[in-house]
Image 1 (cartoon, rainbow, N blue to C red):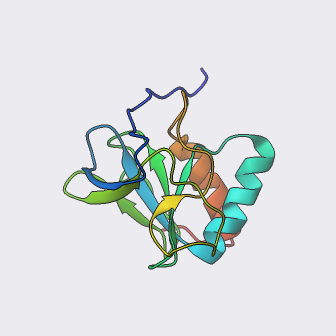
Image 2 (tube, rainbow, N blue to C red; image 1 turned 90 degrees about the horizontal axis):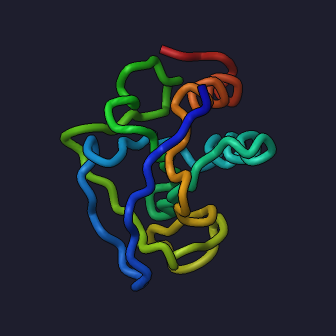
Image 3 (cartoon, helix red, strand yellow; image 1 turned 90 degrees about the vertical axis):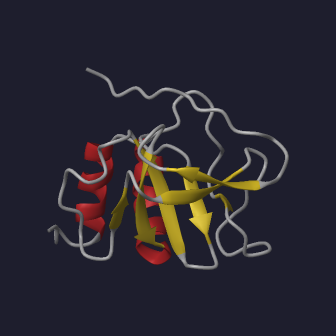
Length: 136
């Protein structure tokens, strides 16, 4: 069965909003260096959902279905964020490239349109390869 995700609503006003996790989505936080490598691998296959870059903290966030971030062993350095956490989510029109811009949270890839979440199994597999197969 193909992975599908429900769309969620984003404003187009340039603002960043803090959103609770565990309702519409969870997040997987990855250090920028490894995250950019993983994003490249996922982009080649077309399997990555949109990615949020937080340049001030040098991390990327993949959005995954609610409740799916904590139920697998992620590689060391990868953090699963679910219910009880919040995430700064940029407006749909805050898009930029890596290490470019004002340092504020933005979409590193095109913002969500339709398929907005990444399949956690695909993300886990890719990150295991990027981190050398070291999973908890």
